[in-house]
Amino acid sequence: MTKLLLISANVHQDLSARQLAYCERLVKESEHDYQIEVAAAGTYEIPFIINAYQQRNPFDGYIALGLVLKTNLDHYDYIMSHIKECFTSFALNSIAVGNGIVSGNSLDELTLKIDSSDPCLSAYPSAVKAVDYLVKLKKNLSI
Image: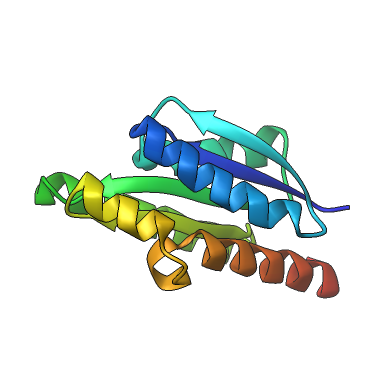
């Protein structure tokens, strides 16, 4: 059975816990085993966590869950640029990552997005589908 690692950046603890619970519910319905890593750090550190696990204790796929506020645009741009570069590198190295990172202008906006049934807003449903597809593709192609 394939195994996924769900990584939750825990800066906004209540919202992060909700986001993780919603995502975990979907993963439980899948055919994958999973483990959870709750990071006592922010979204910026998620690629480090993925890389560390991939080197020492690899999983078949990873789901990144994080919440990024756009209140300081320089900081926001720096974080999102870093995430984009790292996730691109993971993809080019056949590391399956589902991106469940959500951004918003306020905690209220993040709450609305996390609670939304629209996968384009809440992100975690798309992240679960993406990593499920990528893990199966890797298996079919024997990567």
